[in-house]
Length: 310
Ligand code: SF4
Image 1 (spheres, rainbow, N blue to C red):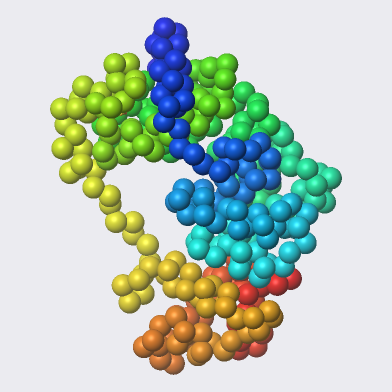
Image 2: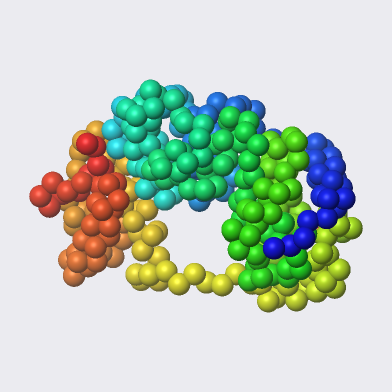
């Protein structure tokens, strides 16, 4: 564990909070402390770009303004409202979560980290984010940006492969919390998203450059970093050169446009997602549909497929 220099930490607090005051991103979820809004935004942000969440969050909240409304919706309604956000199983888990909260917590999100982490779809990061940003509790919130910023400032980290492990960073984050945690946690995420980015850190514009353990090396070797740190292709299963994840997304997209409880046949679905689809590809399509069924996103009625309702 790194030794914490209190003077350095105080200077970090001052500089980062000052920078945030003048540079914060105007994000919708920073204008509220409503636990439900914060929760939905955090779930969306898990795997979707900030700009897309900015656009989709108000639409989702208009359709499901409360946990109760979400809990009483059908799966199909929630999947349709999730359109454009990707990774539809998050929508299913969010609805499950709403049902648990309505049934077990008198319709109010718990403000306790352990209880939150027991809810569907909530991990350490999301539980801490809800507790800090909605319930104003003094806890750290460490996303991947914060993890990288801390790793570079307190240790010497050149590329993402040298990033410190989450447990080590969470532990450090807990030790260096200032009094005013809300802006601090938001500021660290902004610093990582805008200045201390993974491949193009802007050390010459960084408010904490003089306090950073990685800065000198980083300035000398930024070119190497950009070359060595080129994103590695994720090895995910593909079909016809396209990730299976994308094919599954196409299936959901087609089913979203089927009205009400309507369903479509497997061959029709195949043609709708792939122009050159032939009967020989039915087994492949069957696998995709089964995965979506397992995630609770679609249902089968004999040889037809539809969005899950329940
Ligand atoms: Fe990141 Fe560079 Fe700032 Fe250090 S000086 S925190 S490496 S941007």
